[in-house]
Image 1 (cartoon, rainbow, N blue to C red):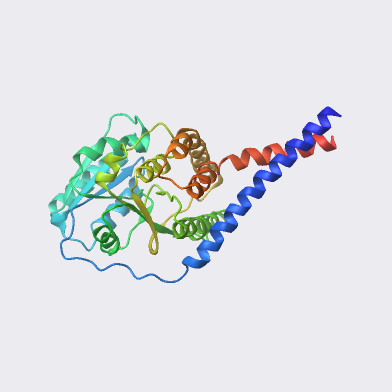
Image 2 (image 1 turned 180 degrees about the horizontal axis):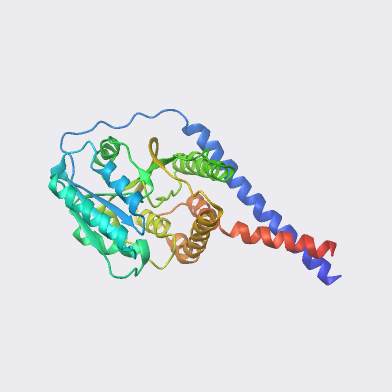
Length: 332
C-alpha cells in the first residue's frame, strides 16, 4: 500500500512539472504571436566600430577553409576587421590549412592571426577566453566552422550596438543547409526552428532572459569582460555567460530577420553527442546560476520564475524517466 501510494505521488509530481512547463510554453507562445510584427532595424551610422571575428576550430579543415572564404567576403572595411582563428585541432591537416588561410588573408590586407593552442584546456570556452585579451575589436563576432555568414551580416548587426549602448549581445537566427537531407535533419531542424521562433522571440517580447546560442552572434567586448569572461566550468559556456551578463544589467537581443546558414548533424552519433553536451551544460548552469538568479534584487519575480524554467529545461528528460518508472511500477 505504501509503495503504491509512493508511485502515485511520484507520477502526480511528474505530471505537475510537465504542466508547469506547458504553461510556460503557452506563455512564450502568446508573446511570440505578439512579436510577429516586423520591426525595422536601426540605421547604420557612418562611424563603424572595429570588430574582432573569432573562429573556434577543432579538426574541421574543410569546413574551416569554407568559413574563412566567407569571412573574407564580408562587406566591411578591412582596416576595421581583426580575424582570430582559434585552432585547438589535434590533426596536422586542419592546423596546416588554418596556417595557410591566415597567410592568404594577410596577403589580401586583412589583420588575421592563427592561434594554435598545444592543449585543449577549457575546450571552446578556454579558446575564447585565451584569445579575448588580444582581440582588437570593441565588438566580437563568433562563428563555428559549419556556419556560412552572408556578406552583409556585420553591417546588419552593427547598427543595434550603435543604437543601444547597454546591448551586450546580439543573436541571429540559424537556417539550415541540409534541413531536408533526411528524417533526422528534418526533426532536428524543426526543433531548432521552434527554439528560435517560439522560445527566443517569446522570451524577448516578454522581457525575459534570453541566451547566446554559441555561434552566429555578436558580443560587446566590454560586456564579456564585465561579466567575468568565458568560463569552462560548464559545457554550455554560452548560456552561462549570457545569464551572468544579464544579471549585471546588460541587455541581450535576438534578431530573427538576420539569418546564418549552417549544417545540421547528419547522423545519430553526432546528434546524440551534441544533445548530451547541451543538456548536461544546461543542468550544470541550473546548479551554478540559480542561486545568483534568485538573490539578485534587480530581477523581477516573473523573470526569476521564467529563468528557473529556462535553466532547468534539461531536467524534463529526468522527469520523463521518473514518470515512465512510475508507470512501470504501477503495472508490474
